Image 1 (cartoon, rainbow, N blue to C red):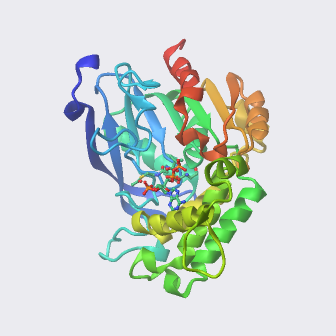
Image 2: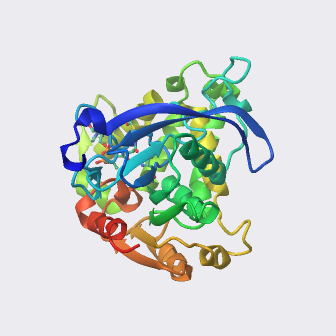
Amino acid sequence: MGETLTEKVMHREGTVNIGSLTLESGKVIDDVSLRYERSGDPSLPVILICHALTGTHQSVGTEQDPGWWRGFAGEHAYIDLTKFQVITFNVLGGCSGSTGPDSLNQNGEKYRTAFPFITVKDMVNAQYHACLKLGITSLHGVIGGSLGGMQTLEWCISYPDFMGKAVLLAATPSLSDYGIAFNRIGIHAIENDPAWNNGLYENASDVKGFEVARMVGLVTYRSPYLFTGRFNREEKEVEEKQPFYQVESYLKYQGEKITKRFDPNSYLTLLYAMNHHDISRYHGSIQEAAGKIKSKLLGIGFKGDLLYPPNVIEQFISYVPEADFHEVDTDFGHDGFLVEFEKWGELVKYHFETGQ
Ligand SMILES: CC(=O)SCCNC(=O)CCNC(=O)[C@H](O)C(C)(C)COP(=O)(O)OP(=O)(O)OC[C@H]1O[C@@H](n2cnc3c(N)ncnc32)[C@H](O)[C@@H]1OP(=O)(O)O
Ligand SMILES: N[C@@H](CCO)C(=O)O
């Protein structure tokens, strides 16, 4: 099939039910479903793509409705769909079709804040069971950025014999105190907004604290250079007594936009899971955890990433038996893994396509 695949054959979405899932905490979530997207020839080796905080299972999408990594993954792209098929799950705890705070529990009511605390490892365990249900018995590779990178590391540690290679983008072996601090500002803004109403809000767009959470998050996902290059203190014309800058307008727009496409309780669930991310917590130390990684690992850091500094990724990579590191020169900072594929895509292509 390969190069003659049509969009219709290449792209399919579905929901897979994995039954009950026992969490790391010992709690059980009944009737767990994960929404997924599969692209490519089903006879080709599988690469699992793990999405970031507000991403979805729609990584490749279609020409009419492009996914968030379309262009990076596609026919003759850096993840080449003439050589591999890809699968992406919406994470456990997410809000794009997988079981999470906005989905219904056994009583037919939304979980909301009754949804349990979950870990990145729980997300990965759910994906492993979903792969088996879908008849996927091994993965050629796993790749992801940010929260997707955390999942990639947990995959390497939890299921070393199920997967081949791995690519870690813009993620460290644990979330830093600096990262937790910014997450706390977002959590505080949401949970202290009276409209959040202990998770019982009617509409996400009523929760203005969610807008604040996205605004502060977004500032940490970019860099000062990007904002200067883009906005350069330009003012927007508004009927206000004080000036209103384009960068403020941009942040305001992004704050409002998130409430139209994401669920605040889900956002909280994922932030709490990210805060907990630390691969040393059940292996003694980060060095010991790294030493157990069997996958050939490519780590990529993005210049100016405040949350997941490239030097921390580089140091971690030095502990992994078979691994390489590369730093990408970018003004985007952390969000570099979502853009400028021409700067780093060939590294990923080479990693997945060569050797064993
Ligand atoms: C359903 C889904 O969307 S699933 C996708 C899941 N999302 C993700 O995984 C996140 C991926 N995307 C991103 O993080 C970003 O879009 C990136 C990193 C890929 C690109 O970043 P950027 O180039 O900065 O674009 P970004 O999306 O932040 O901003 C552009 C938007 O801001 C708006 N904007 C730009 N300048 C201004 C301004 N001065 N005032 C108001 N709005 C502005 C643009 O009109 C554009 O609006 P649109 O999104 O409605 O088209
Ligand atoms: N920009 C990413 C979060 C940072 O990894 C997202 O919105 O999912």
